[in-house]
Each structure stands twice: as structure tokens, then as C-alpha cells.
Image (cartoon, rainbow, N blue to C red; front, side, top):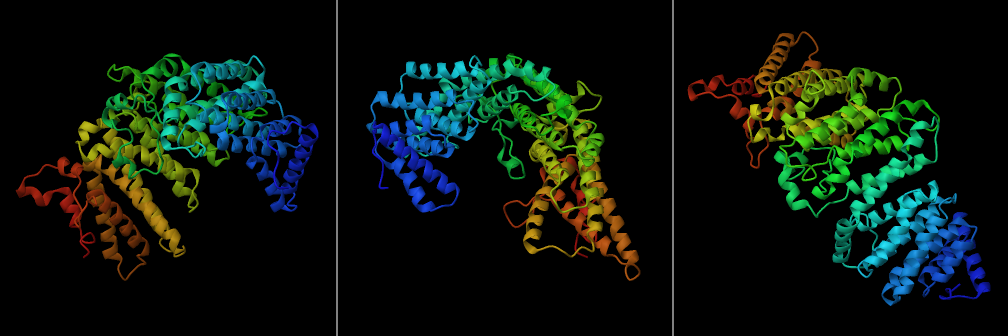
Length: 609
């Protein structure tokens, strides 16, 4: 077959073309003459104006893959011929695809509807700069009618999925190629953010709220769950948007972290934390509407259902709800009132109160995980702490928990991480278990909180309880690192690629350990001195008498830790003494030899003696 006639209105030819596409689609699936079959399918999209043929296939074919290929052909031809189509044809194509997705929302072949919905979104974007406001409003009125649920749950779901496709197309990082300059995509992005993005969020949150009672009151899975899950996913997608309209005034109000996730923090971080900065225009929807309270209540109501049919800890609606909760913890900027941070603190406290039972008590939660419970809540709880650490100061961070618990957030963070490390070393495996991931997330949390320690004094950065919490945590870290070093003393296995990756990861980990140590330097430096001296004494006393392999491994581990604590790499050949150490111990030149760091650095093995 050389190609298809474009504007084909002959019924016999339409049927013939449909059968050819059906046969080709089926043949590809069955690996029967795939090259010829692919050529037939490609010729449909490459023919001139194949829209009526494609619409006929979509409306009449019983072969789902053929319908899928027809939708793809509409997209290919329309994008190629867009400049030559008249306004009515453009509107007709968009309207057809949108209506088809809604009218066939109950079809079991969901991937076909998803494809058609995606094509509608792409064509709408292609014509975005040409469409007048009234045209957009007419199309979005149809979408809104679907999303509010008046046509049933399936159509409601289809409406939400269409908006998901549309937002994806208008986001530069996920948009489809159209052979157009970057300026076109950027202009579309800017206009959607300005005119519709907030409206989409409102529609979606209202749709989710409208089905909540049905979900909560049911003891088993109900169709409304898929609507709520899709809505939660779309809300998360919108919050992940790269907001630009309010960027300039937002950054002024992020307090210490005014430039978002700072470059110095990024250099040590293993897990990205996307700051959500939509601006003051979104305050009514995100903060004042009670929306976050609804979300936390929804998840709290889902938790008892995890033993019911259709629900479990990692079921889609639970995962989506947790992701959205974590993302709300990254909300910052002018979306909050300029009231000395009070509105923001209330927001963070509400979220922290909602997720605390995911991780508290840490030993009970970790025990449940070891007994077979999913680790998802624990990990998402850790991610929430990381998100909060990136949008507030250590003093505010520590004070959040104090309003509802007898201890501060930093103390709890120390307890939580100690439990995670304990599980990690107990498991004694090189596989990346949940405790491995939790440890790295919590290390990133400490890094986000403590990175300013190199520019301001510890007492200015941390409250006294926070300094004590850091000291306790570092002491436990040293103890565990020594245990792991001792346990690995006689393990010579491991390929070189793994070891190189392991060394790189270890260096990142030690850099984070160093920040924790510097937060309580008056405790941690004497601790390191004492522990190191004890190992050196053991080495000297046991030489020639006992096997000292374990002691040597412990000394090596201590040397790595000490090196990271008392020096930064700097830009030249010589390591630099960190500001946190220089400012913590104030001594005159006569007493310089008594400086704790000098004493530590002069220990025999540190000097290479």
C-alpha cells in the first residue's frame, strides 16, 4: 500500500482503509511481517488530511490498537498541516478528540482514551496563541462539566486525565515536540499559568472533595477511588509546576533560604526537594480553604481501611495522598502572609502533626517494618522532614514539635535517625534497604538545616537542645561506624566498580556527618580524641600479641571521620579549617597548642607516626 486518500468520504473505501489498519495493527502485535505493517500504519499519518478516515476508524473499529493508531495519525497530520488548516477545521479536530475521550470514558481500552485525550491536549496547545478567550472558555466549560461529576464517575475521571495531559503539554520539561521555537512553548506556559492553572487546581480539588465521603463510608473499593486518585495526582503535578509569575517577590520571603534550595546544600544532597512557590494569588486555594486539613483527614480515614479489600498501604490513592502531603511541606514564599512567619509555621505544624504517626515511635515503626509492614509511610515521613528543613530555619524547625510534644523536632530527628542507623547496621547487608534510603534522606535533612554553620555561629543557628541532639546523634554515628568497620575487617570481596561507587557515597555521607559534628564541636571533638586515643593505645599494647585487623579498620574509619570534621577541601591544595571550628574555640596565641583540634590533629596516627 503506497498511501491513503486524505479526505475520503466513500464508505467502502473508509471500511477498506479501516480493515487495512486493523490488520496491520494486529500483525505488529503478532510479529507477522512487521516492516510492511508499520509502513501501512505510517502511511496513514503521512497522507494529506486523513482526519475523516481516522475519525471513522476511531468511531467504528473494534480493534483497540487500530483506534490507537488512528489517534496517533490525527496528531501527526494535524501538527504537520496546522498552518494550512482553516480555523473551523482546527476547532473541529480539538472538539472531536475531546468529545471522543469523554463519550468513551467507560471503554475498557483505557489506553486508547488516554491517547485521544493526549492528542486533544497537544492540538489545543498548538492552537493556543490563535484561539480567542471565548473559544477556550467553551472548551473548558465542557471539561468542567465532566470534572464536577454530572455525567458520572467515568467521565469525571476522563476530564481530570485530560487536564493532566494538558498541564503536561504546557510544561516545557514534559511537552511534546512540535517543530516550533522555544519561545512558543514558553509563551504557552506563561499564559496557562496566568489564566488557567489555578482554576484547574480548584476544579480538581473540588472533584476530589466531592467523592471523599463515598470513599470514607465504604468498606471496600468503590469507583470514586480512581477519581480521587487521579485528582490527587493532578494536584501534585500542578504543585510541581515551575511557577514564574511570582518568582521575583517570592524569593525575598524565604527567610534564610531565600534562594530556594541553596547551591551549597545541593552539593551534598542525595534527594532533590522541589520548593513550591506559587505566590500570593494562590493563598486562598492552598492555605485559607482548609484544603490541607481535608487532605490529612482523607489519609487518616484511609489508614484503618488498609486491611479492607481494595486498600493497602501502597495502593494508588494512599501513595498519591502521601506524595501530595510531602509536596505541601515544600510550600513557601509569598503564598503565606508577611506575619513574621506565623502562618507558615501553623501550616508546617499542621502537616507535621498529620504525618507524625507514620514515624513515631521510631522503634515501634521500624519493628513493624521488619515484621513485614511496608516502609512507605516511614520513608514519606522522612521526606516530609526534609521538605520542612528546606523551607525554614533550624530554630523554627525545632520549635514545631515543641508545641505538641515535650521534645523539639531536632531531638526527635536525632532519635529517628539513630533508630534508622541501628536497623541499617543490624541488617548487615550491602543491598539498599529501606533503612539505607531513610538514612540518606535524614542526612539530607541535617545537611539542609546545618549548612549555614559555615557562615554563622552554632549558637545563632541552633537552640541548646538542638546542639545536644546533634552531639547525641554524632556519638551514636561514631559508635555504629566503628562497629561496621570492625565487622568488615575480614571482608575482602567486592568488585572495583562497586568499591568506587561506595567510596563516593561514603564521602558524601562523611561530609554530612561532619556538619552534625560541627554543630556540637565542644562535645564531638573531645569524643573523637578520646575514641581515637583508646584505639591507638589498644594498637600499641596488642602489637605482636593479638590480631589487630579490626582495630586498624576502626582507626581507618576514625581517620576518615576526623578528616572530614576538622577540614574542608577548599579550592587550593591545602584543606581549610571550617569556620564552625574557628569560631567555637577562642584561644589566644599562647594557648594555641591547647586548642582541641590541635590536640586531635597531633595524635600519633593522625600525623602518620
